[in-house]
Length: 530
Image 1 (tube, rainbow, N blue to C red):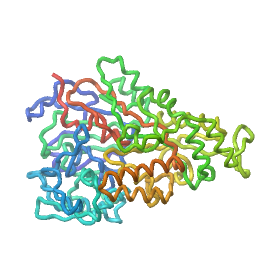
Image 2: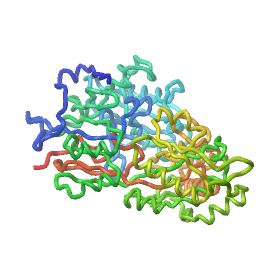
Image 3: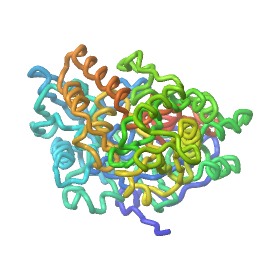
Image 4: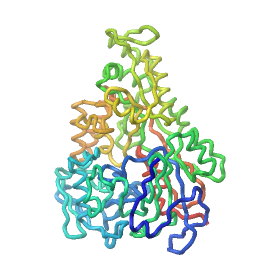
């Protein structure tokens, strides 16, 4: 395993390398006093490919290395970060003006300026930059600096949730601007304004962070932490139980084994994170709308919530959770095997050998991949296959690495996970718009529905809540009639941590968790328990 040392002059001068495996209580005070440092080691399932916001890292906020113009509080309400206040909005919602906070420095000691903000956004929007989240900033026509401390965004059209997109982390032009954004060292050796500095990255093993001495928000009590990358859920739980970890992301069945442990506490976060099976239109079987509709009726979502998630979640009837204000009531699809069989019969899929239906000599059979080591996805995949079999559809479940899965996503089904908080546009557009089919993990099912595209565009371009509501109603109803995914469950995220700190909270979370979400979303605010 190759270890990459991060050579930041500021970091080298300020810190000694290494993090202890288990921390002791009564550490840093946050007041600058020379007291024993608090260290935290957290087990997560995966690591990012890059730590550069220019390529999408931290785009939804909560990066510990960087800050955006704005940030979110516990309740996801927007608040100033690098900006002094929320933006001034003019020209009917087409102009957003931000004033930067005085005295902010990057972790290398250089000052933050408006040009850094301009550089960040322009680079993300550059077609030559390999950022698959670029469509999320489609509304931006231009961004310019007005002096050293003012940034002005001009939009092509009024985009109601634009302010929430300015949680995008800001990078230093004087470092990143000297490199190719796609291949430069900044991707693994980041410099930001956030509360922590990356000091060590052992790929596939761990990332180590220490407090940024130039952080504008003050010295955190947790002066160092490590994200231990442990793909296998069971291994993560074992290492937590042995004391090798202070905390971990765990699936419900494993989190439950720590319930009676007085020294640890379980945190449960509601989320927009859903599990769904992609049903590629290019697949010989999955491309048949009758197959997709039959699977939608055959699955027992409630049983998945009860048995796989141990009740820590909700049935998913689309990308939006049932308690979301934009969720369209009445689209619920109860488990209905008779309906599934009727749909298949009417479409010409007749019972065949081995209980598997067939049509025109083609068997109703396809492969469903899930990422190896992810027990929650594996259990969902097996339950899905069991439900499908009862309707006469054979689903062959296979575990594989993402390196194996990615080239197959266009034609093979995948047990996928998505979900974004903040606005329906954030999650629906990249999941469903045909223009993004096959763009990285965007629109993995290659879903192509002109009516849905039209509704997504209408929802994105209007500030009228009624117009937007009608657009997202149309999208959700279209997914009932022509599903490109089988939506299964919305999952609550569970975290188990040593009960040694105060100020731990959870937010309503997106699909992405581990690094950006969890009780450590505000780790810089933690205090040792007295």
